[in-house]
Length: 406
Image 1 (cartoon, rainbow, N blue to C red):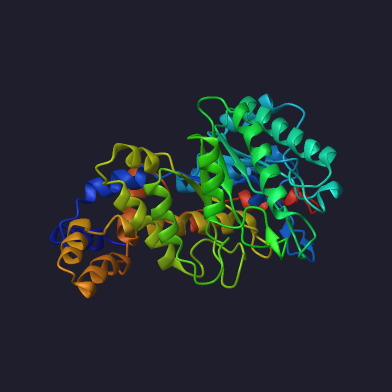
Image 2: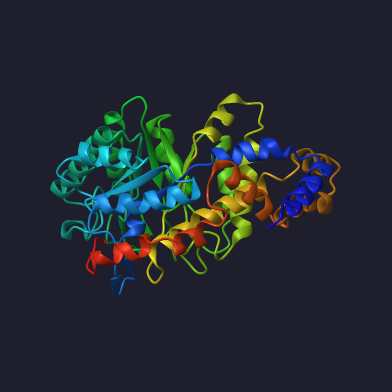
Protein backbone atom coordinates (compact mmCIF):
# COMPACT_ATOMS: atom_id res chain seq x y z
CA UNK A 1 0.00 0.00 0.00
CA UNK A 2 1.43 3.36 -1.04
CA UNK A 3 1.82 6.52 1.01
CA UNK A 4 -0.46 8.05 -1.60
CA UNK A 5 -3.32 5.96 -0.22
CA UNK A 6 -2.75 7.38 3.27
CA UNK A 7 -2.45 10.93 1.93
CA UNK A 8 -5.83 10.55 0.23
CA UNK A 9 -7.33 9.04 3.39
CA UNK A 10 -5.90 11.89 5.47
CA UNK A 11 -7.35 14.49 3.12
CA UNK A 12 -10.79 12.85 3.28
CA UNK A 13 -10.80 12.87 7.07
CA UNK A 14 -9.59 16.45 7.32
CA UNK A 15 -12.48 17.50 5.11
CA UNK A 16 -14.81 15.71 7.54
CA UNK A 17 -13.31 17.45 10.57
CA UNK A 18 -11.52 14.36 11.93
CA UNK A 19 -8.20 14.86 13.71
CA UNK A 20 -6.15 11.87 12.50
CA UNK A 21 -3.33 12.42 14.97
CA UNK A 22 -5.81 12.10 17.82
CA UNK A 23 -7.28 9.01 16.15
CA UNK A 24 -3.83 7.42 15.89
CA UNK A 25 -3.06 8.19 19.53
CA UNK A 26 -6.24 6.40 20.61
CA UNK A 27 -5.54 3.45 18.33
CA UNK A 28 -2.05 3.05 19.78
CA UNK A 29 -3.55 3.01 23.28
CA UNK A 30 -6.02 0.21 22.48
CA UNK A 31 -5.41 -2.87 24.63
CA UNK A 32 -7.10 -6.22 24.00
CA UNK A 33 -6.73 -9.15 26.39
CA UNK A 34 -6.45 -12.62 24.90
CA UNK A 35 -7.59 -15.75 26.78
CA UNK A 36 -5.27 -18.61 27.67
CA UNK A 37 -7.99 -21.08 26.67
CA UNK A 38 -8.03 -19.65 23.15
CA UNK A 39 -4.58 -21.17 22.55
CA UNK A 40 -5.44 -24.69 23.76
CA UNK A 41 -7.50 -27.45 22.20
CA UNK A 42 -11.24 -26.89 22.21
CA UNK A 43 -14.31 -28.29 20.53
CA UNK A 44 -18.07 -28.65 20.50
CA UNK A 45 -20.25 -30.40 23.04
CA UNK A 46 -19.56 -33.55 21.01
CA UNK A 47 -15.79 -33.59 20.85
CA UNK A 48 -12.58 -31.74 21.66
CA UNK A 49 -10.51 -31.60 18.47
CA UNK A 50 -6.80 -32.02 19.03
CA UNK A 51 -4.39 -29.93 17.00
CA UNK A 52 -0.69 -30.46 16.56
CA UNK A 53 1.43 -27.85 18.31
CA UNK A 54 -1.03 -26.48 20.86
CA UNK A 55 0.43 -25.51 24.26
CA UNK A 56 0.89 -28.27 26.80
CA UNK A 57 0.74 -26.04 29.85
CA UNK A 58 0.00 -22.43 30.89
CA UNK A 59 3.61 -21.39 30.32
CA UNK A 60 3.43 -22.37 26.64
CA UNK A 61 0.05 -20.63 26.34
CA UNK A 62 1.75 -17.42 27.43
CA UNK A 63 4.49 -17.96 24.85
CA UNK A 64 1.89 -18.22 22.09
CA UNK A 65 0.10 -15.15 23.41
CA UNK A 66 3.39 -13.27 23.32
CA UNK A 67 3.61 -13.96 19.60
CA UNK A 68 0.22 -12.35 19.04
CA UNK A 69 1.23 -9.30 21.06
CA UNK A 70 4.63 -8.97 19.35
CA UNK A 71 2.99 -8.93 15.92
CA UNK A 72 -0.02 -6.74 16.68
CA UNK A 73 1.14 -4.57 19.60
CA UNK A 74 -2.38 -4.89 20.99
CA UNK A 75 -2.41 -7.71 23.52
CA UNK A 76 -0.25 -7.09 26.62
CA UNK A 77 -2.32 -9.25 28.99
CA UNK A 78 -3.62 -12.82 29.09
CA UNK A 79 -6.68 -14.04 31.00
CA UNK A 80 -6.29 -17.34 32.84
CA UNK A 81 -8.83 -20.02 33.77
CA UNK A 82 -8.61 -22.17 36.89
CA UNK A 83 -8.15 -25.15 37.06
CA UNK A 84 -7.27 -25.25 33.35
CA UNK A 85 -4.24 -23.08 34.12
CA UNK A 86 -3.49 -24.41 37.57
CA UNK A 87 0.23 -24.47 38.47
CA UNK A 88 2.21 -25.12 41.62
CA UNK A 89 3.80 -21.68 41.65
CA UNK A 90 1.77 -18.68 40.44
CA UNK A 91 4.63 -16.32 41.17
CA UNK A 92 6.63 -18.28 38.61
CA UNK A 93 3.76 -18.01 36.10
CA UNK A 94 3.61 -14.27 36.65
CA UNK A 95 7.37 -13.95 36.21
CA UNK A 96 7.21 -15.98 33.00
CA UNK A 97 4.53 -13.66 31.65
CA UNK A 98 6.56 -10.59 32.54
CA UNK A 99 9.66 -12.03 30.87
CA UNK A 100 7.60 -12.23 27.67
CA UNK A 101 6.41 -8.63 27.97
CA UNK A 102 2.98 -9.72 29.22
CA UNK A 103 0.95 -9.56 32.39
CA UNK A 104 -1.69 -11.86 33.82
CA UNK A 105 -5.15 -10.47 33.16
CA UNK A 106 -8.54 -11.55 34.44
CA UNK A 107 -8.75 -14.70 36.56
CA UNK A 108 -11.70 -16.93 35.64
CA UNK A 109 -12.94 -19.63 38.04
CA UNK A 110 -14.44 -22.86 36.69
CA UNK A 111 -17.69 -23.98 38.29
CA UNK A 112 -19.08 -26.15 35.51
CA UNK A 113 -16.87 -29.21 35.01
CA UNK A 114 -16.86 -30.85 38.43
CA UNK A 115 -19.26 -33.79 38.90
CA UNK A 116 -20.70 -32.10 41.99
CA UNK A 117 -21.84 -29.13 39.90
CA UNK A 118 -24.20 -31.03 37.59
CA UNK A 119 -27.20 -29.44 39.33
CA UNK A 120 -25.52 -26.19 40.26
CA UNK A 121 -22.52 -24.82 42.11
CA UNK A 122 -23.17 -21.75 44.27
CA UNK A 123 -26.92 -22.26 43.77
CA UNK A 124 -26.93 -26.00 44.51
CA UNK A 125 -29.52 -27.13 47.03
CA UNK A 126 -26.75 -28.98 48.91
CA UNK A 127 -24.97 -26.53 51.27
CA UNK A 128 -21.77 -28.63 51.16
CA UNK A 129 -21.57 -28.21 47.39
CA UNK A 130 -22.27 -24.49 47.69
CA UNK A 131 -19.43 -24.25 50.20
CA UNK A 132 -17.09 -26.18 47.92
CA UNK A 133 -17.88 -23.79 45.05
CA UNK A 134 -17.32 -20.72 47.19
CA UNK A 135 -14.01 -22.12 48.41
CA UNK A 136 -12.92 -22.50 44.79
CA UNK A 137 -13.87 -18.87 44.16
CA UNK A 138 -11.83 -17.79 47.16
CA UNK A 139 -8.90 -19.88 45.88
CA UNK A 140 -9.11 -18.05 42.54
CA UNK A 141 -9.27 -14.73 44.36
CA UNK A 142 -5.96 -15.62 46.05
CA UNK A 143 -4.50 -16.57 42.67
CA UNK A 144 -5.56 -13.19 41.27
CA UNK A 145 -3.75 -11.45 44.10
CA UNK A 146 -0.63 -13.58 43.61
CA UNK A 147 -0.50 -13.00 39.85
CA UNK A 148 -1.15 -9.27 40.11
CA UNK A 149 -4.55 -9.45 38.45
CA UNK A 150 -7.13 -6.80 39.28
CA UNK A 151 -10.07 -8.37 37.42
CA UNK A 152 -12.01 -11.31 38.84
CA UNK A 153 -14.29 -12.57 36.05
CA UNK A 154 -17.33 -14.67 36.96
CA UNK A 155 -19.57 -16.77 34.74
CA UNK A 156 -21.89 -19.35 36.27
CA UNK A 157 -23.35 -22.29 34.35
CA UNK A 158 -25.90 -22.67 37.16
CA UNK A 159 -29.50 -23.11 36.14
CA UNK A 160 -32.23 -25.69 35.60
CA UNK A 161 -33.66 -27.63 32.69
CA UNK A 162 -37.21 -28.19 33.94
CA UNK A 163 -39.90 -26.38 35.94
CA UNK A 164 -39.78 -27.46 39.55
CA UNK A 165 -36.21 -28.72 39.32
CA UNK A 166 -35.04 -25.91 41.60
CA UNK A 167 -36.47 -23.08 43.65
CA UNK A 168 -35.60 -20.04 41.56
CA UNK A 169 -35.98 -17.51 44.40
CA UNK A 170 -33.84 -19.56 46.78
CA UNK A 171 -31.20 -19.92 44.08
CA UNK A 172 -31.28 -16.14 43.55
CA UNK A 173 -30.46 -15.57 47.21
CA UNK A 174 -27.77 -18.27 47.30
CA UNK A 175 -26.13 -16.54 44.32
CA UNK A 176 -26.13 -13.23 46.16
CA UNK A 177 -24.65 -14.88 49.27
CA UNK A 178 -21.77 -16.31 47.22
CA UNK A 179 -21.13 -13.06 45.36
CA UNK A 180 -21.20 -11.12 48.62
CA UNK A 181 -18.52 -13.33 50.12
CA UNK A 182 -16.38 -12.82 47.02
CA UNK A 183 -16.94 -9.08 47.10
CA UNK A 184 -15.68 -8.82 50.66
CA UNK A 185 -12.45 -10.56 49.61
CA UNK A 186 -11.63 -8.00 46.89
CA UNK A 187 -8.72 -5.64 47.43
CA UNK A 188 -9.44 -1.93 46.81
CA UNK A 189 -7.87 -2.16 43.32
CA UNK A 190 -9.82 -5.24 42.20
CA UNK A 191 -13.06 -5.52 40.28
CA UNK A 192 -15.64 -8.27 40.11
CA UNK A 193 -16.93 -8.67 36.56
CA UNK A 194 -20.30 -10.46 36.50
CA UNK A 195 -21.17 -12.19 33.24
CA UNK A 196 -24.61 -13.34 32.14
CA UNK A 197 -25.95 -15.89 29.68
CA UNK A 198 -29.50 -16.53 28.51
CA UNK A 199 -29.15 -20.30 28.21
CA UNK A 200 -26.74 -23.24 27.99
CA UNK A 201 -25.98 -25.52 29.64
CA UNK A 202 -29.29 -24.91 31.45
CA UNK A 203 -32.32 -24.61 29.18
CA UNK A 204 -35.25 -23.69 31.44
CA UNK A 205 -33.54 -20.91 33.35
CA UNK A 206 -30.03 -19.77 34.11
CA UNK A 207 -29.39 -18.07 37.43
CA UNK A 208 -27.88 -14.95 35.80
CA UNK A 209 -29.79 -14.93 32.54
CA UNK A 210 -29.35 -11.38 31.25
CA UNK A 211 -27.66 -8.02 31.75
CA UNK A 212 -30.42 -6.82 34.06
CA UNK A 213 -29.82 -9.63 36.52
CA UNK A 214 -26.06 -9.08 36.41
CA UNK A 215 -26.67 -5.36 36.93
CA UNK A 216 -28.94 -6.11 39.88
CA UNK A 217 -26.26 -8.15 41.64
CA UNK A 218 -23.61 -5.54 40.87
CA UNK A 219 -25.66 -2.73 42.42
CA UNK A 220 -26.43 -4.89 45.45
CA UNK A 221 -22.72 -5.56 45.99
CA UNK A 222 -21.10 -2.15 45.48
CA UNK A 223 -19.04 -0.07 43.04
CA UNK A 224 -16.30 -2.69 42.56
CA UNK A 225 -18.86 -5.06 41.00
CA UNK A 226 -19.61 -4.44 37.34
CA UNK A 227 -21.21 -6.21 34.39
CA UNK A 228 -19.24 -8.13 31.78
CA UNK A 229 -20.90 -8.24 28.34
CA UNK A 230 -20.16 -11.32 26.25
CA UNK A 231 -21.26 -10.37 22.74
CA UNK A 232 -22.30 -13.96 22.01
CA UNK A 233 -24.47 -14.33 25.11
CA UNK A 234 -27.61 -12.72 23.73
CA UNK A 235 -30.78 -13.99 22.18
CA UNK A 236 -31.23 -13.27 18.44
CA UNK A 237 -32.22 -9.69 17.79
CA UNK A 238 -30.81 -8.28 21.01
CA UNK A 239 -29.58 -4.71 20.65
CA UNK A 240 -26.18 -5.13 22.29
CA UNK A 241 -25.08 -1.53 21.77
CA UNK A 242 -28.21 -0.40 23.63
CA UNK A 243 -27.23 -2.60 26.57
CA UNK A 244 -23.71 -1.19 26.46
CA UNK A 245 -24.97 2.41 26.46
CA UNK A 246 -27.33 1.75 29.38
CA UNK A 247 -24.64 0.10 31.50
CA UNK A 248 -22.14 2.89 30.80
CA UNK A 249 -24.68 5.51 31.82
CA UNK A 250 -25.16 3.60 35.09
CA UNK A 251 -21.35 3.37 35.52
CA UNK A 252 -21.60 -0.42 35.62
CA UNK A 253 -19.99 -1.59 32.38
CA UNK A 254 -16.84 -3.44 33.41
CA UNK A 255 -15.75 -5.13 30.22
CA UNK A 256 -16.40 -7.36 27.23
CA UNK A 257 -15.87 -10.89 26.09
CA UNK A 258 -15.68 -10.35 22.35
CA UNK A 259 -16.71 -13.12 19.97
CA UNK A 260 -19.23 -13.52 17.19
CA UNK A 261 -22.29 -15.64 16.56
CA UNK A 262 -24.69 -16.48 13.79
CA UNK A 263 -27.29 -18.38 15.78
CA UNK A 264 -26.45 -18.43 19.49
CA UNK A 265 -23.30 -18.71 21.61
CA UNK A 266 -21.15 -19.81 18.68
CA UNK A 267 -17.86 -18.27 19.95
CA UNK A 268 -16.74 -17.47 16.42
CA UNK A 269 -13.90 -15.15 15.42
CA UNK A 270 -14.77 -11.59 16.46
CA UNK A 271 -16.50 -9.61 13.73
CA UNK A 272 -16.90 -12.61 11.44
CA UNK A 273 -20.72 -12.59 11.48
CA UNK A 274 -21.78 -9.02 12.30
CA UNK A 275 -18.95 -6.47 12.15
CA UNK A 276 -21.44 -3.59 12.14
CA UNK A 277 -22.59 -4.54 15.64
CA UNK A 278 -19.00 -4.39 16.88
CA UNK A 279 -18.61 -0.98 15.21
CA UNK A 280 -21.79 0.29 16.87
CA UNK A 281 -20.61 -0.93 20.28
CA UNK A 282 -17.50 1.20 19.87
CA UNK A 283 -19.65 4.10 18.66
CA UNK A 284 -21.53 4.05 21.95
CA UNK A 285 -18.31 3.80 23.95
CA UNK A 286 -16.63 6.67 22.13
CA UNK A 287 -19.76 8.77 22.42
CA UNK A 288 -19.80 8.20 26.19
CA UNK A 289 -16.11 9.10 26.36
CA UNK A 290 -17.13 12.67 25.49
CA UNK A 291 -19.70 12.93 28.28
CA UNK A 292 -19.55 15.87 30.67
CA UNK A 293 -19.97 13.42 33.56
CA UNK A 294 -16.44 12.56 34.74
CA UNK A 295 -17.68 9.30 36.32
CA UNK A 296 -18.97 8.09 32.97
CA UNK A 297 -15.68 8.98 31.30
CA UNK A 298 -13.87 7.11 34.08
CA UNK A 299 -16.07 4.07 33.44
CA UNK A 300 -15.16 4.17 29.75
CA UNK A 301 -11.46 4.44 30.54
CA UNK A 302 -11.60 1.29 32.69
CA UNK A 303 -13.48 -0.95 30.23
CA UNK A 304 -11.66 -4.26 29.78
CA UNK A 305 -11.62 -5.56 26.19
CA UNK A 306 -11.19 -9.32 26.26
CA UNK A 307 -11.42 -12.00 23.60
CA UNK A 308 -13.43 -15.11 24.53
CA UNK A 309 -13.48 -17.69 21.79
CA UNK A 310 -13.55 -21.40 21.22
CA UNK A 311 -11.31 -22.06 18.24
CA UNK A 312 -12.65 -25.50 17.33
CA UNK A 313 -11.48 -25.92 13.75
CA UNK A 314 -9.18 -22.93 13.28
CA UNK A 315 -5.43 -22.88 13.89
CA UNK A 316 -5.10 -21.18 17.27
CA UNK A 317 -2.61 -18.35 16.83
CA UNK A 318 -3.81 -17.18 13.39
CA UNK A 319 -7.41 -17.24 14.64
CA UNK A 320 -6.46 -15.08 17.60
CA UNK A 321 -4.59 -12.65 15.35
CA UNK A 322 -7.64 -12.40 13.11
CA UNK A 323 -9.94 -11.63 16.04
CA UNK A 324 -7.62 -9.00 17.47
CA UNK A 325 -7.20 -7.27 14.11
CA UNK A 326 -10.97 -7.31 13.53
CA UNK A 327 -11.49 -5.53 16.84
CA UNK A 328 -8.83 -2.99 15.94
CA UNK A 329 -10.42 -2.38 12.53
CA UNK A 330 -13.89 -1.68 13.90
CA UNK A 331 -12.46 0.52 16.65
CA UNK A 332 -10.56 2.49 14.01
CA UNK A 333 -13.73 2.97 11.97
CA UNK A 334 -15.67 4.10 15.04
CA UNK A 335 -12.97 6.70 15.73
CA UNK A 336 -13.87 8.30 12.38
CA UNK A 337 -17.42 9.17 13.46
CA UNK A 338 -17.99 12.90 13.57
CA UNK A 339 -20.05 13.07 16.77
CA UNK A 340 -20.86 16.76 16.34
CA UNK A 341 -22.38 15.99 12.94
CA UNK A 342 -24.44 13.16 14.42
CA UNK A 343 -25.65 15.39 17.25
CA UNK A 344 -26.50 18.24 14.89
CA UNK A 345 -28.58 15.99 12.62
CA UNK A 346 -30.24 14.34 15.60
CA UNK A 347 -31.17 17.69 17.14
CA UNK A 348 -32.84 18.66 13.83
CA UNK A 349 -34.70 15.33 13.93
CA UNK A 350 -33.03 14.42 10.66
CA UNK A 351 -33.27 10.65 10.95
CA UNK A 352 -31.46 9.80 7.73
CA UNK A 353 -28.82 12.48 8.26
CA UNK A 354 -27.97 11.17 11.73
CA UNK A 355 -27.85 7.58 10.52
CA UNK A 356 -25.66 8.56 7.60
CA UNK A 357 -23.25 10.43 9.87
CA UNK A 358 -22.69 7.19 11.77
CA UNK A 359 -22.71 4.78 8.83
CA UNK A 360 -20.30 6.71 6.60
CA UNK A 361 -17.47 6.08 9.10
CA UNK A 362 -18.14 2.34 8.90
CA UNK A 363 -17.79 2.40 5.13
CA UNK A 364 -14.27 3.83 5.09
CA UNK A 365 -11.36 1.53 4.28
CA UNK A 366 -9.07 2.03 7.29
CA UNK A 367 -6.23 -0.10 5.92
CA UNK A 368 -4.07 2.98 5.12
CA UNK A 369 -4.57 4.25 8.68
CA UNK A 370 -3.68 0.92 10.30
CA UNK A 371 -0.65 0.55 8.04
CA UNK A 372 0.55 4.00 9.12
CA UNK A 373 0.27 3.36 12.84
CA UNK A 374 1.96 -0.05 12.57
CA UNK A 375 4.87 1.53 10.75
CA UNK A 376 5.10 4.21 13.44
CA UNK A 377 5.11 1.51 16.13
CA UNK A 378 7.68 -0.63 14.35
CA UNK A 379 5.19 -3.48 13.85
CA UNK A 380 4.63 -5.66 10.77
CA UNK A 381 2.31 -3.93 8.32
CA UNK A 382 0.42 -7.22 7.91
CA UNK A 383 0.63 -9.17 11.21
CA UNK A 384 -1.04 -12.27 9.78
CA UNK A 385 1.38 -12.53 6.87
CA UNK A 386 4.27 -11.90 9.24
CA UNK A 387 3.19 -14.77 11.48
CA UNK A 388 2.68 -17.20 8.60
CA UNK A 389 6.11 -16.29 7.23
CA UNK A 390 7.79 -16.81 10.61
CA UNK A 391 9.22 -20.06 11.88
CA UNK A 392 7.21 -20.06 15.10
CA UNK A 393 4.28 -22.03 13.67
CA UNK A 394 6.68 -24.75 12.52
CA UNK A 395 8.69 -24.77 15.73
CA UNK A 396 5.69 -25.45 17.96
CA UNK A 397 4.78 -28.56 15.97
CA UNK A 398 7.35 -30.38 18.10
CA UNK A 399 4.83 -30.22 20.95
CA UNK A 400 2.81 -32.84 19.13
CA UNK A 401 -0.85 -33.55 19.85
CA UNK A 402 -2.55 -33.88 23.19
CA UNK A 403 -1.83 -30.43 24.56
CA UNK A 404 -3.83 -28.46 27.10
CA UNK A 405 -7.57 -28.36 26.56
CA UNK A 406 -10.75 -27.69 28.41
